[in-house]
Amino acid sequence: MSASASKGTALITGASTGIGAVYADRLAKRGYDLILVARSQQKLSEVAARLKPLGRKIETIAADLTRKEDVQRVAERLSTDASITALVNNAGTASVAKLLDAKIEDLESMINLNVTALTRLALAALPGFVARKNGLLINIASVVALAPELLNGTYSGSKAYVLNFTQALKNEVEGKGVTVQAVLPGATATPLWEKAGRPVEHLPAEIVMTAEDMVDASLAGLDQHELITIPSLPDIADWEKFEAARKALGPNLSHQKPAARYGILG
Ligand code: NAP
Image (cartoon, rainbow, N blue to C red; front, top):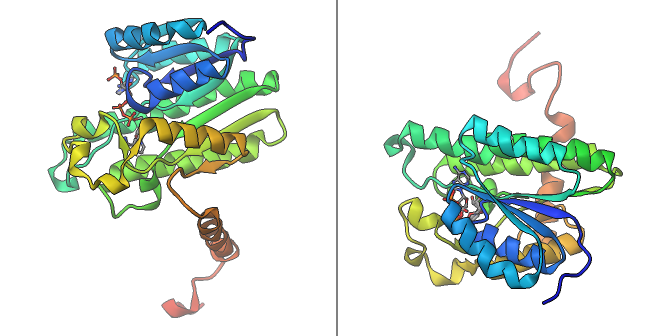
């Protein structure tokens, strides 16, 4: 395939396997040059070699995004390279252990990656996007953001953070030429599950989507200007009802006096 006009460069974290590698393929096909980030240089090089026939410029950056200095290196690139027009904040790990059995170091490392690195990279990219009135930020959350009963609360909490962060960002960048999207995949067939100690084959097949279908649906959601994309959800009205119920709480979430049912006089 010959190179068509570039849409600029998309920096994709966690692009060496799974969902990130599919984003790399699809965004290259949409006309983006690529900067692929993950820890494994070898796997990044394999992805880059696979995508070479698409004719886009592809660079790889080996970085461990649980390490502050590595995050800083990638953030520096995002804040100084005006050719970057898209960031896919995708790198993430999961924890499926029971909370009382989990190793705190593993949980901390997951939070560093899923929350801290994602935040730093978004905030490194956004000022340039706003200044140039052009930018796309895709944050990969998860449906467990809406389901703390599934898995343990640390992974779902990290993904609830991504959802919350994206919804707040949307308000800040509205009208500034910047598009933001949070994607909430359900179970997706990637190496993530095996790494977390529960191979995806152990899940009922009917709840597991391929990474290709997940990313294609997410990009279709982006094309439909969705802020929140839930690839599995058949009826978007269900999400809208959920949001409406949440917002209906708004006027009563903060009052001078406790609610009458607590019987606090004064
Ligand atoms: P995956 O195949 O395990 O991919 C994770 C990617 O992140 C890999 O490229 C990995 O590469 C990279 N990564 C992991 N730790 C890293 C670190 N410390 N620094 C830099 N890169 C790191 O998993 P996936 O399913 O595609 O996950 C992608 C995103 O989707 C994650 O945010 C995940 O939470 C989310 N998600 C997945 C599912 C699912 O069911 N699979 C469902 C909902 C949401 P290296 O190991 O080479 O660093």
